[in-house]
Image 1 (cartoon, rainbow, N blue to C red):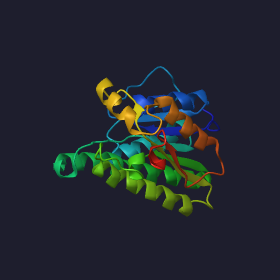
Image 2 (image 1 turned 135 degrees about the vertical axis):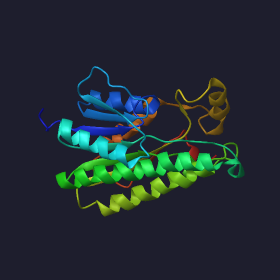
Image 3 (image 1 turned 90 degrees about the vertical axis):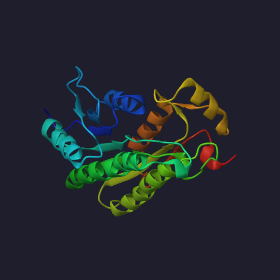
Image 4 (image 1 turned 180 degrees about the vertical axis):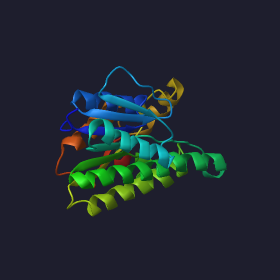
Amino acid sequence: MSNQQKVAIITGGSQGIGAGLVKAYRDRDFRVVATSRSIKQGSDRDVLAIAGDIGDPATADRVVKEAISHFGRVDTLVNNAGIFIAKPFTDYTAEDFAAVMATNVAGFFHITQRAAAEMLKQGSGHIVSITTSFVDHPLSAVPAGLANLTKGGIVSATKSLAIEYASKGVRVNAVSPGFIKTPLHTAESLAFVADLNPVKRVGEIRDVVDAVLYLESAGYATGAILHVDGGQAAGH
C-alpha cells in the first residue's frame, strides 16, 4: 500500500463518539486504526480494528506497530477512550479508581507516547484528546471528582505537550464536551442533564466529531482546549 495517505488512530472506536470519529476520518480519506475492548474487524480494508484494553501498554504497542506495519505512518491520534463515573467523592471504590486511572490516564499515556514518537520521526502529526468541561466548570448536581482528577491531568498534559512539540511539527489539542447523547446514556439521564447547561439541551455525537475535525484542519491551533458543552464552561 502507498504510505502517502494519512492515518489516524482512534481509541474507544467501537461505538458512540469513537464510531462517529472513525466514519468521519474515513470520509476525509484517512486510513484508520480503531481500538477498543470489543471492536471487531469490518469489511473496510482501510479501517484496521484492534481489540484490547487501552490501559495495557501492550495494547498501545500493538496499535502503533500495526499502524506502521499496515499503513506506513501515523498522522493523527484521537484519545477518545474514557470512563466517567459520577458519584459523591467518598463513595468511589478502589475498583472505580483503578478502572478510571487505567483507561483515562494510563490509556492516554501509553498510546500518546508511542504515537508521538512516530510523529516526531515524520516531523508532523496531530494529537487530540477528549476531556470534559467538568474540569473547568464542576456542577454540584453531577459530582465527578474522579473524572476531574484524570481528565484535568490530560488538559494540563495537552498544553505541556503542545509547547514541547511546537517547534517539531506536532500539534496537541483537546476537545472538552459537556453532556452528549451517546449509547451510554439512558433517556432518563439525558432528560435530567439537558437542563444543566445554558442552552438547555444535550449535544449530539456530531458536535464533538465536528470539533475534532476543525482542530484537524486548523494548522495554527495547538494547545487549544475547545469546549463543546452548550456554554457550560462559560458559566450560568
